[in-house]
Length: 149
Length: 149
DNA sequence: TAACAAACAGAAATCGTTTCTATTTGACCA
DNA sequence: TGGTCAAATAGAAACGATTTCTGTTTGTTA
Image 1: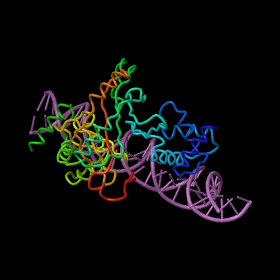
Image 2: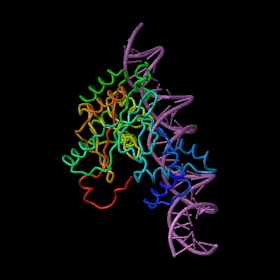
Image 3: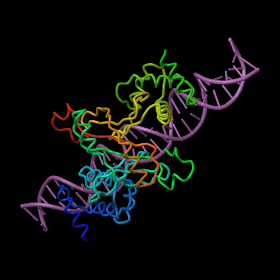
Image 4: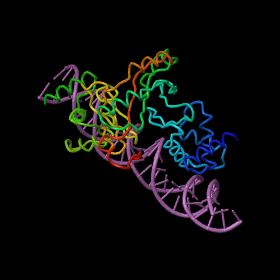
């Protein structure tokens, strides 16, 4: 239960109680290879815990996302996806409009954005979303399906 | 009715009938200084037309957006905003998390994105969303309201 | 262990968006 | 210019993701 201990410390640092639900959410997200919707996460949680409500999952994901423990991304068909980014660092995503696979991108333009905003708008950047929609390599070989959304 | 004539031509080019509703939507969006939600646009339309349904507005916005006549942007609180981009060219947006004002940014990283995606993922870029969330200059002077969403 | 605030379950509400069906409108042609 | 037909629309209803609400349970701290 090494993981659970470190998760408990993360939560403690955020002044959040280390509850069974929160630890279970972190445990599932950290084992996730890709992205998952609140509902998908909820379904996996139900296998581990006797009971857990979908509203609870939403609340926990929101808390963790607000605190930068996980990241929320915007999928074009408007469901929200989350992923664990504990030590992955800030990066962006490529979403295939055909098969809906999500891939990581190393590219980040945060410095240019920061410059542009402070120079021209005199505003303050809190966060940014960069998301690329396109066709992944396998899908780009196939025909059709470009207007998937 | 100069505008209406050119709007009619745009629609004709897209093989869409130049209906009263579509022309009215284009007329309103082209006069919009900022961004508007489907519902806001609908409310303005109701002043001009005796009847128009909200589903009709959604459908028209979707059609125009699909055809690149207008652009859809994603607001963090998940409402969709649209703006007329007839001759404005491709650009991105800064959204103030406090007052929700939307400002244009000249910055665009499309070349870097293109490079990154074709080199590392061997995929094909169709579109991208870059959206910066932060505090606009007036709001950054005020206190609080950072966690507006 | 007791006490209290925080977290939670489950039901229900909310709200943006979409679907469905009957009716109307615009484009084309005689 | 009027007739015809497919496209477009109104209005009601459905949908589905997310949030709110209330009473109950859980974790923390002393």
